[in-house]
Structures are given as structure tokens and as C-alpha cells.
Amino acid sequence: MIMMFFTSILLMIISNLMMFLSIILSKKSFNDREKSSPFECGFDPKSMARIPFSLHFFLITVIFLIFDVEIALIFPIILTFKMVNFFIWSKISFFFLFILLMGLYHEWNQNMLNWTN
Image (cartoon, rainbow, N blue to C red; front, side, top):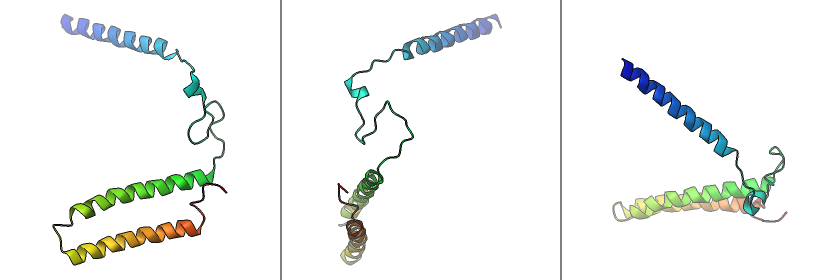
């Protein structure tokens, strides 16, 4: 019983000491050139966080994510080439690529692929 008491006291002391050290060490912050410069998206890290941003930047990001997921979906199609019927495989692959190309055409038609407005 006494041993459990001393163990719990020791654990409390160690945990409080670790919390105190983390509070002291987290106060130190060095502002170097990289931390003071704007992010890749153009935000200034020292300004307000609720400023409006370019909708075009958001749309380019969404397009990148769509094509990134598309690559992850094409890999299994390539790997299943030898295991399935060629006619069914080609039909599914062409349908998938057709949907992607129609989406790309729609984005191009809406001028979402232009880097400057």
C-alpha cells in the first residue's frame, strides 16, 4: 500500500516536471528567414488568418488532387491486365480515361487551366 502511494507520488512529480519543462521550452521561438517569408500559396504568416484567397489557386489545387487520385486508380488497372479478359479490361479502361478526358475538357473550356487571369 505504501509502495503504491510512493509510486503514484513519483509519477505525479515526473509528469508535472515534464509539463513544466515543455512550457518553458515552448516559449523559445526563433524567427529565421524561412519562417518569416510567405508560404507557397502567397499567405503572409504574420498577417490575419481570415483574409480571402484566390479562388483560382483553390481550383488548381482541386484539379491536382483529382489527377493525383486518378493516378492511384490507374495503377490497379495496369496490374490486372494479365488476369482479366482483354475486351472487358479495355472497355473499363477506355471508359475511365474518357471520363477523365471529358473532365479535363470541361476544365479547359471553363478556363480553369489558365495560370493568369
